Image 1 (cartoon, rainbow, N blue to C red):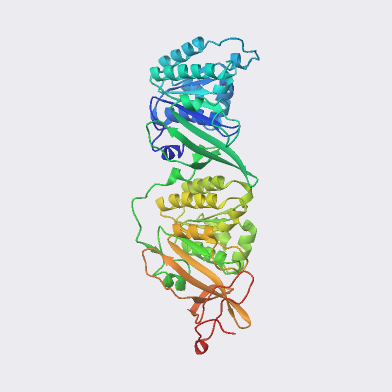
Image 2: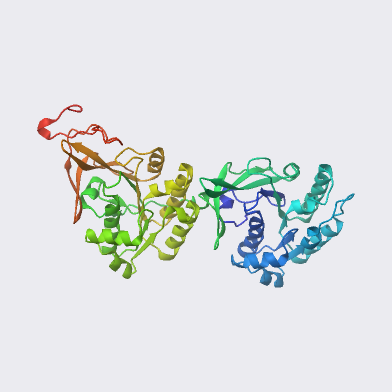
Length: 495
C-alpha cells in the first residue's frame, strides 16, 4: 500500500505491506506523529482511502489545528466521512496507578465501530507508550499488543502504530517487545551532528516484503511535510538530450567538443581566485542573451557582493533580474539544513522553470554537512535537474587556498557529473598563472590539454597550451607545478 509520503515509498519499494501492522519508533521530535498523520492524509488525498486516527496523547483538536498548517483539512474529511478520530487521550492522560490488568475491550469496540462507519483502509495509533503505562509487566504488554495486532488484521486495514524509544541508537522501543510482535518496523531518528539536527528514516524489517536498507535523510517541510532525500527523486527522465548549449566562453566550448549538452551537469573545481564565479556569471549571461531563464544560487557571497562583482566584468545582473529571466538566491549554508536548501531549490525550479542553474559554491556547504550528506544533496538535486533538462554548473574549491587537487568529496561529486573542468594555478619563474583543463566530458570528445587562462575587466580568456606542466601546485605554495617555454621544455621539474 503506497503511503503517499514524499519519497518514502521509494525507500520502501512501493509502500507498506498491505493489511499488516507497522511499528514506527523514534525519539522526541523525530516525526512519529506526523508520519502517522500523513499516512492517513495522503491516503485520502491521493488514493481516496478513508482512515481512522486513534490518539492516546494529543487531543483530536490539537491534531486538527497542527495538520491545518500542512494543508490537511481534517474537519472537512470528518464531515465527508473519510476521517474519524478515536480520542482516548483524556482517559489515558489521567495519572492513575496501574493496579491489576487494564481492559482494552471498550477501546477496541470504538476502533471497530469507526472503521466500519468510514470504510477505513488505513488506521494510525499514536502512541503505544501512553497506553502501555497502564499495564503491569512486559508479558502483559506483549499479550495486549498481540491482541491489538490481531484485531487490526481481522478488520482488513493497513495500520501504523507509533512508539517511543529511549535513545537514537539504543534499542528499538522503550519496552523492547513491540518489534517482535508487529510485522514491520521503521525507525525515525533525530540526531545532533556538527551542531545541527539530522533526521533519518530506516526500515528495520518488512516481514515478507523487500525494502531498501540503511538510513535515509529526510526533512520536515512546512509545505510538503515529510520529504525523504535523495531517493524521492531518483527517477530516470527517459531520454538524453543531444542539443548543445554554450558555456559562455567560446574557447571553453571548443575544449568541450562544442559546448555542454542541454541536460549536462558540469562541475568546475579550483582554488579561490581562479575564475569560477566569473564562469558562472558568463554562463547565465549567455542564457539571458538567448532569452532563457536561469537561476543563480550563491552560498559564498551576499546578493550585493555578487552584483558588484558582476558590474566589474560588465555584466548587468540587475537588468537580467528585472527582465524576469534571472532569479538570484543568496543564502549562507548555516541558515538551513542541506535538505531544506534542496527543498528551496526544488520549489524554485518548479515555480520558475529555469533552463540553466549555477550553484556557487558547493564547498561552502561543507561547513555544515558531512561528506555523505553533501553527496546526497548533489544526487537528489541532480535527479531533479536531469528530469527537467536544466543545464547546470556546480563550482567547488578543494581544501587549501592554492591546492588544485580535489578532496574525496569533490572526486565523488565529479563521478556523478557529466563534465569536469579543473581550474588551477601553475608556477612560472617569478609569477603564478592560471590554467584550465577539461578532465571529462561524457559522450563527447574534448581537448585534453592544459591551457593558459587570463582574467581581465572583460572576462575570462583561454589561451594556448602550456608546455612542460608536470604537477599541480600544492597547498603550501611550493613549486610543484613548473611551466617552461617551448624552447626550454624539459621532461621534469627544473631548478
